Length: 278
Image (cartoon, rainbow, N blue to C red):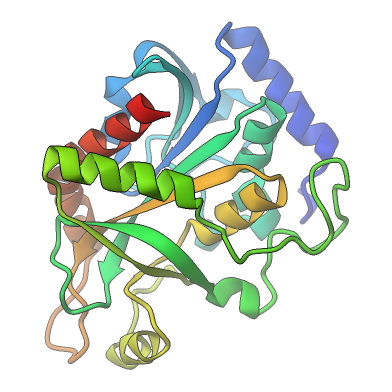
């Protein structure tokens, strides 16, 4: 497949989705590693495997089921990605962000993006949540920006502003939920790396020095494309492991998935509370 996704390909996928459901979702959710069970809360759900959609990249990572789940959550029509695609799986950065383009063509106005992230801030503990206030685009700084290539003028400008990548009103709603439900919610900066290897202790010390609170291998390309198309974004990281700043511990994907079991109940409460307040 060509490095760059075309608008015709995106519209073909959107047309297939429209034939499979009468729902017209307003909110899109992307669920990260080990967090896919949140999709079980969707009522009157229509499930579409990624493999049923033309040109849709298929997730190959454990903990990413690879389904679209479309239905109702807290009286909101939602489209949930149960799993996501990563650059390290061998897809182009344009393909990684393509699902967000499909959401935009379906009329989705709000994107709630979640991920499993490693703590770089030493105050964070596995199982806790962090609301993303900003991000550091390490992948994009090296040239892998999902907006590289022809600009789709009908969706956004050539040079989109990223000063408010994460919507302030949505973040305020999340704080209201935290107060009402007595949740623990950190707020911090997420740094997106390419992966798939976990970071060295020196990597982590560098990331902490430049202001990183949590680190992962996703999210940033999706958010960039969302903001290019003026989709509002709320980002939540589930903290899956402590920072290995001294090299005395080993990080594994199994650890990430196990932490997801602790994260999902609070993440579900938070997201349902936000949807209730929209």
